[in-house]
View 1 (cartoon, rainbow, N blue to C red):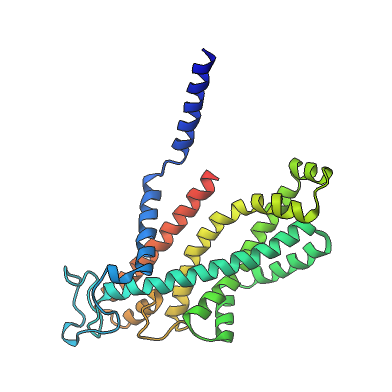
View 2 (spheres, rainbow, N blue to C red):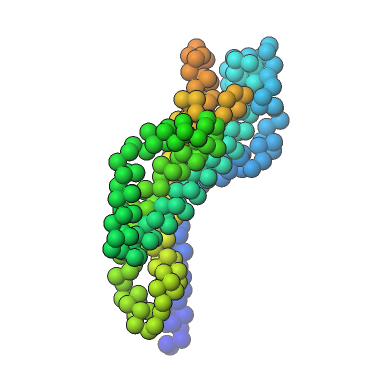
Length: 282
């Protein structure tokens, strides 16, 4: 009888866990959109046969159709193709920005929260200074200093997000450091470095994943904004922000703006929805 009840309870536990990881429709759609964009960035040639840099002048400024899903631009280039090829630059740049922000910010927050005292005071003041500067303004300042191109725009965006990661990591480390199992590890003879790498870092990093996903979407938006202002790669590059910037000069043909803008917005909103879902299941 006890064996049957044990099996039943284990099945219920497994079922409840599976139910907890069941994707809502909005999250599933968000994952699908992000997967499409990532697939575009990895193998754009599988999704279009047109050349993103070469157009047919006689087919310039054509509206969306079965042949040209997003229409054509002022040089007769297929706009869908340019959006697809531009996704590689957007995804790669956003990943660079997130890695820079997570590594540098996580390192600062980890040391500030774990060691405390003067180390915490100095690093916390550094983070406060970074937070006092508007994120986009800081990115513009950095990219102006190191040069105009998409990789530099990604580096600038990553630097501007360091303070956010540092603040979150510091608060998580302080909360984890006060846990009972950390005190038990100290009392059992564990060294500071063992406790830092074995216990505090893995537990404190759990909140960094949803933040990293959120910052990925935010980085796409910031990098697109920098490209829109001319701080990214020059034409014939097909960064999403650059496509919107070029399209704004042709208001009689609105698909030149709507197509890259819609893809950018859909990607950012999808990433944000995934980030909220990750925070909820955590």
